[in-house]
Image 1 (spheres, rainbow, N blue to C red):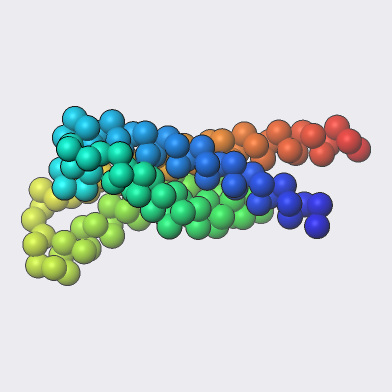
Image 2 (spheres, rainbow, N blue to C red):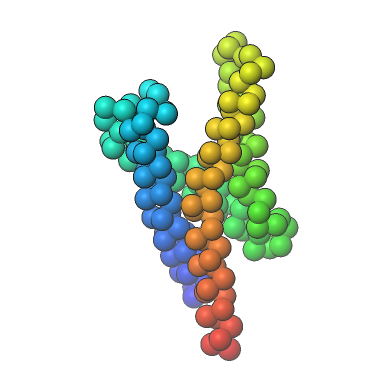
Length: 144
C-alpha cells in the first residue's frame, strides 16, 4: 500500500499542473483567435477550462498511466510517450477526415502540427510526473 499512494499522488499533482498549463495555453491561443470555433475569441475562458479538463483527464491521464507503467518496467524510453501521442493524434485526425470523406493531402501537415501541439501540452503532464517519480525514488532510496 505504501507504493500505491505515492503513485496516485504523483498523477494527481501532474494532472493539476497539466490542467493549469493546458487551460492557460488554450485561453491565450483562443483570445488571439488561433483556435477558431474550438475556443472562440469572445469567450475564451469557459471553453479553455473545459478543453483543459477534457485533454487532461480524457487523454493525458490514461495515456500517462499506461506510459508510466511501461517506462517503469523499462520497456520504453522516457521521450517516447509524447512522440507516440503526437503520432496517434495525427493518425486519428487524418483517419477521421478520411472516414468522413473530407480527406485532402494538405491535411497531413495540419494534423501533424495538431499532434505536435497536443504532445507539447502532454509534456506539461509528463515532465512533472517524471520529476515527481525521480524525487520519490530518491526519497525511498535515502530511507534505506
